[in-house]
Length: 188
Image (tube, rainbow, N blue to C red; front, side, top):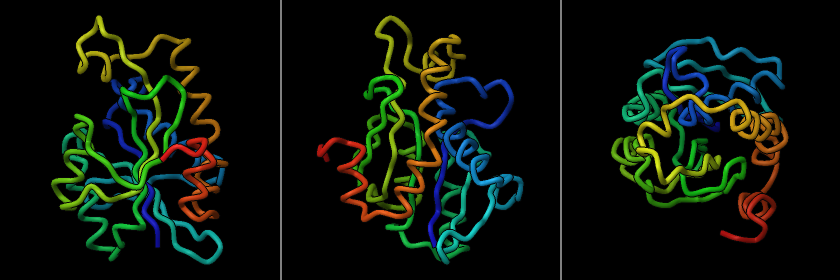
């Protein structure tokens, strides 16, 4: 069983923010598979499906970003999911807009969602897809990540989300080292 989590903040006012790149990515993947993320459990919206005989859970925590680890921990415990079977998809300030990077583990890099996950799972060793949102040195970091994106920037991030089916299917089909090499160009 695998748990694939898109991070974001719940509520209409956050839909077009940089911080909701993970939600957008998960939504596009679900849409590509004709799935609806509409089941509720532990303050999370989720759906389940089988992929080549393996149960996959897509999850969008419905607590604010800095509390998302609580929701993920409840899912991990309830469904008995191994840490190595967790994939977190989130926005990353240090990655160029519209680019992705794949990692096995790492620091939170100041990301409050990852800090919450690491606090509740007691590890930073979980797989992750970083979606680049870039950064604006002239704008406060919090205002930047939770501010609505200009149309042209939204289109850049949405273009990457439109590739979610291929990227997540590759994750589900490939050895993780090969998956990382494919999307990072050999960089780990």
